[in-house]
Length: 18
Image (cartoon, rainbow, N blue to C red; front, top):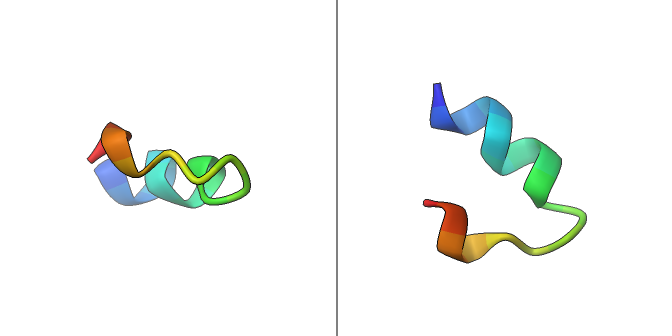
């Protein structure tokens, strides 16, 4: 379910989260 985290990090550009 990384998609949920990615969507929230999208505002912070959390590309490293992936």
